[in-house]
Image (tube, rainbow, N blue to C red):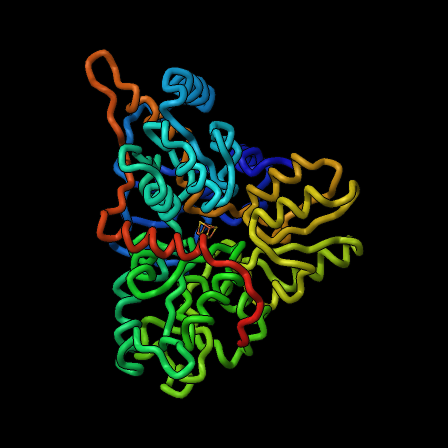
Length: 436
Ligand code: SF4
């Protein structure tokens, strides 16, 4: 089992053609940071990047031309000089050549909590994507600077629900239900907005302002219980699959989960469907997890009769139904840790995490359900060249004082309600008594 980086190096040398979703993976991210904005190599042709997406300017030639060895030396030297002044965080889906520099590796929420627990670090270099850096900024102190080494590292799923579209949806629902804060005879308001952690800070702020809440893939059921106890129905964005898989597991029938298409009036629904809805699902998805299929699971079972198939709940419902279990990245890691030696796992989540787990747990057979190497294209935008650039800028030179590049800042008007929505999530406790 080779790492994604190794595989990409092999195809660059012409050794493994056809094993990757696109040979563009051999190019450095700055190739895609100039000209027309895009999600970069490996992204789905159906993912249209919003015009307002942050752009990354060209970084100095010395970083673009440096060899992997030189960048490695420079990053280690910069980390040594900066010491505890800088905290480096790496997401599970980040490639190994970046993760090696991280002080902590985890999912987006674990990393944001780590930022909150490290108030002495002056700067937090977040090797993940834009919404994660925003969440770290929400939870860190105002004095701390959160740095995203490449501003073009966004998330195509998060981009599928923008504040204007969600505000427009809310106005239409308001047109149907009137006062959105008025409680009915059962003490329920008409709609509770719930946003997945994988969303922009302004959507978390929207939820905070409208009695709503944030969820992660670990606590989505608890959060939906919280919301069902307060609202007649939920508007869940941006990931339809996490919403559908979670609500279905709680007993919500599919016919009570209409999809909201933001390009259509009332999301493409009639008033009756929205009246009957328990969860209105935003039409968003993760391009990485959408790649997994029931056929892949059937092939894995045919080849390894004892295989345990675990998929992420961002996968489509038929895939989650066909798997043995589904859960967050943390769930997947813990399931592998707890398994007896000699277990076989087929995993449906991002390839970098799967291949790292395969290397860390050689006592098991662990493979990705999708045999084609296709990492998260937006995570892929973080490259050691950008990390070296951001770290060396913090140090400065004899002629130039240190400076913070690519700082991610959430303005107070957004941050305050966004924190409220996050605090509601942290306070939500499972009760399993809410009827659906
Ligand atoms: S794996 Fe999917 S949800 Fe996660 S950052 Fe990449 S595109 Fe976004």
